[in-house]
Length: 471
Image (cartoon, rainbow, N blue to C red):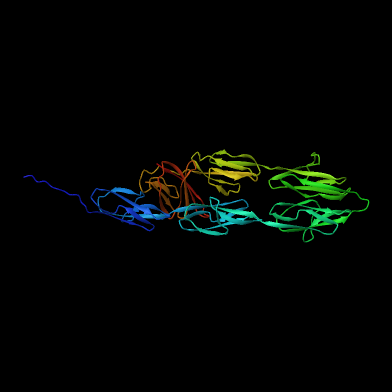
């Protein structure tokens, strides 16, 4: 008699799923036949992202979502989620600066941003990346729900220049009115017949200038008074007219003087420029002296000329190589200092100035030249072992002293809680930007094979720059 044993599939494999806060289950829980394929999937709430699945013991299983596996027994798994990290990038238009608020924020966090106007200017408004107005408040607080670019705008203060004639022996010709901060007001008075202009005084009665016309830089409300005196009988008087070409101004010397009077004509260059020479009414050079002493013997016209300053930009590399950027630049020019990504056994970290202060972590650093400049490209020695081959734990794999390693689609961070993390390729292309939310953070990321640079920033703490490898 032939006896056959009959078997049936065990239908008692239970897949029990749960979702931690800020997410939900989409599919996968239930009862399955032994050895059946199971696909489980979770979905994060708005402002959150999926992190990983853990088992009943709380151990990490995978960062894949959805995740497919073969069921061979009862399974308990939980989906975990984390707050999305966002970057608030603050920019300041000319004549102001950002005081606080730039950096990384969690989803729905309150960002308090503040700007500060330069002297003589005031804050106007905040605008978004599209140029739309956001707020006229400063500081301004808003809820962060995504990467955000906000720009601060400023405007010059407006001041009044009031001009008066001290006596009836002369009159104001021009120059009174409203002026924006740091603009020039050219004021001029005219003496009556038989009189000559003496000087301008301020509201306190202090002498300001004997030049007429006189150019002043407006930095506050100002009241100036023109004074006149009677001409001496039998004495000839002559007019000295001084003017300034672009990028400078006349400080003193213009006016009406008795013949034989010794005066000094003086001009002042704008920031970033220098005085070159005086020329006469025909355009011929008269003197390169400033102030220029002269004796008044006739009516004369002098013009002051100025030229832009030139500065040397010197670039130095410690254990690396400078690619471009050193040389001579004119005042106000934009320069780009560029360092090679790697030296012999070293990798680029940052640019520092002559005082050793950090300026930028970008290989190519663009800046405005306003004086003699020395920049140093700082490199750090490599500290890498062989790449990980897939183990969840890193005892024999890549791990920098501050604990960054990558395996099975997950970037692991150690002791970087609260740091704003940026990951870039060796070419400088940013591929990840997030906020580390613990000292043992895990971030799901499908990175192609290659070498990457991690930059970490946290308030005033020392920046973290590390290289890691994905195989």
